Image (cartoon, rainbow, N blue to C red; front, side, top):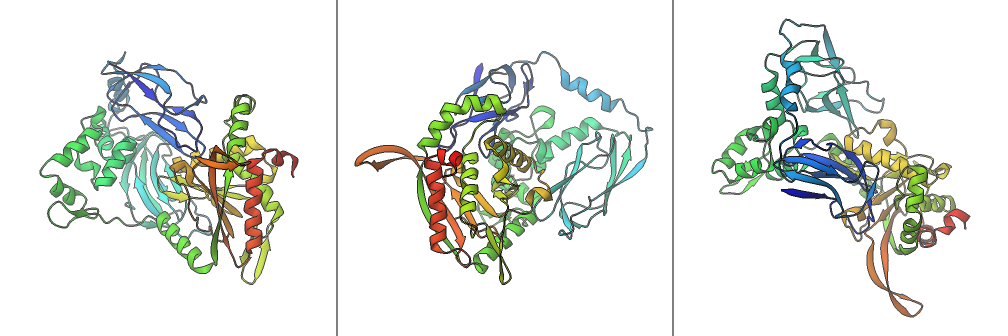
Length: 494
């Protein structure tokens, strides 16, 4: 049966999206829930998974193409066989190795940590001792207060032993495992099967989400997918089985606790990132005189401008024109006019910043982070779009560096991509203000004595009243509103 693969429904504040990465090609045999393509919006990356086992019969849009919500981007043939039997062939190089092929022993160490980071935590081991590993394959994720560091294999080989298990605190350059270059494994096929059923990285997003919601350990479920992979149906079957609650408590004792009957609860230790977020948010609430002021903006002029020049902009610059570049431009100009908003308190001093580094709130699988787009006053619209895209992709892949996270004088957060209509954003210390953008929604508005339906968006500016007075905060927000409602002001500096 032929099935159309479509772009997911996009939030109202997102006009269109672009094809970021195809993970399959025409003729590839795929499993149910396998990720087919990443679709990128202004701020988030959406994954589109296979609806069933089958074959990709046609791809209608290439990487970089602009697409709309619910637009058909590929055709999929359910249950069709692939043209070749690549899986069996791809396993042969590993099984052909012999146990006599011993190589040089190498110590796997924690990377050098920045001076401001005292220690780190072993987050996830992606391989186990004896498992065949390729050069540059990710071995382990090491989590610091705000970024995740990947440690990769120095060569083809295998781990002989792991010295620091998941959850253990480690320091810079500490030895955490031993690696044997060129060493073979006795049963790679079995190892691959175990890894694909137990390692979260081998699971599709929908399966990972279901496992987390239900508090189930993937290792407790026998996968029926390709290579022993756990599918959504496998998880659902395990939930229906009578012995599922007992098995769940046994395999994930720390995660799930029975309260009697069908009532359970799970207890999971906070990650370092979540602890840091909690501490900083509480500090912002307790140590500042935080207020929020609101306004609203008519987005029709910008939407019309994007519609008129989107195609030409993308052809010339190779990147899609989004809303965020307008927001960043407007904020940068407003910061120039209201230097108090671009300042911070340091002890008894007020530090006025003569540069414009803007933090962009990015939602990642591990939590909210705020990487910094530097020197926004020197960037054009294409430069801003490219910088935001790079930060968003790094955040999604857990590749943000300490340099990406440090600094920032002002923060923009866009809850509108998730459907938020209004919010009171909290300060990102030591900054003195944060701007919240929200969902663009059609509303009846009075225009010259008549009612018109316009795409309206609420703006929310939270600020530290110790340094910013009401006059400055309202003037700053009105300036942003005026620039967004008349984008020509951004060009003419008026």
